Image (spheres, rainbow, N blue to C red):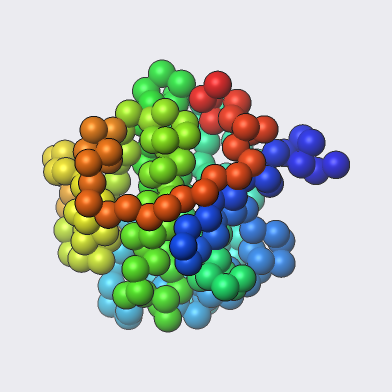
Length: 215
């Protein structure tokens, strides 16, 4: 049975409006279609890896191959949990919680994308709240980090709302130009005192806790 060997299939995070879990293959194809239809306005560049610059068919393939790659390369010392975000049974985007050497560092990082039609409705905040609950309350993380372009106002607003604090900058090259990202950090103490709270139900974690290096 698949879940005997891959219990991550049992993992599910539920909030008031959303369900976060691994997608089935058909649901992954639906997510690929969602990405192909667009996940940000023309001219925006929210990601250092410019996969959204690809033509629609290639964007769809990137989503599917990226998900399979994360699953195939998983280890307790280097993992990336790509969860589909569902609203009323339909996928509306994906979120990722990732870590390296989590057993020692107890630090995670997160990223996300949502179909353009689902922006501006608070889903990004609600979904990241679920990820942070998994990280801090269930896995014992000590910090969560994020890197965001300074002009990515939507992601910056979500991070500020959830209590992230400035942690320096990063400079990289995108399309031959220097770009600057804000490094943001949320400690366990700040997470506990944050103003935004959503009730989060976690199911299926015990069977796969060792996958995260969090036994």
